Length: 261
Ligand code: DGL
Image (cartoon, rainbow, N blue to C red; front, side, top):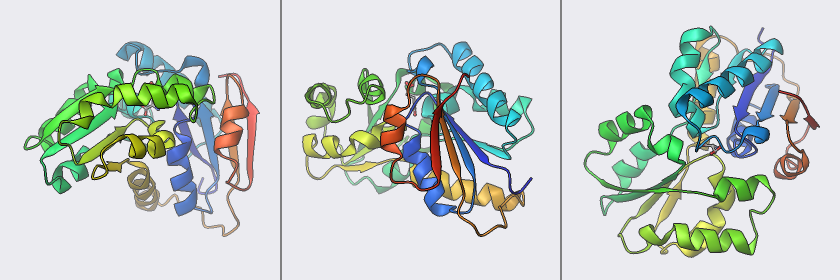
């Protein structure tokens, strides 16, 4: 079991931003990553449909022997992780917007949160916000259209810059000093955001925290791979592999392929 892979799934290529952090921290682990690009974006789907998609992805990964499943997708985590945990025995690790560190470190007590509609309207997100961000003002903005442009390989296009300039308007004059990236696709547009936003705004995401949590859960369940060879990585898309290829090209021992799931 310890040599079995860690499974990952996201609504598309965005979760590779988190997957890379995990691979860097756990270089001896094998992984399988599913980019469910055919069904992206999840962020505008109803909860029930998101749960069904997550079940489909989970079953695919379990059939391939995954010992743990990480969900580097805020929308899937906030809408479906409770269901998955109550229906499957394997440990699940989710990702949530990094509201807590932003709220704790904010001097202006105003933070921005950029996420999908599905995440912002979820119960789990609202609970987390109640728990950790009661003392700060949160300016929440839905990143409509960003995921679609990243999925179609246009993350550095003039359309993206124009879209972000418009989406970021509510953050420009509100006095925020932190922007929380609440969608795993968004680290891929961080540089554009940094140029658009006022200089003092710090942008944070949850990728490194998910990697640390993955290490800790593997240890806790005694599931770390004892082998010291580099891990190998299979990445699957159910739509097209070009963007997945490009975004993961810096990682060694990986194969990218089309699959039906
Ligand atoms: N990458 C996802 C997230 O972290 C979902 C984007 C989407 O499919 O809407 O929320």
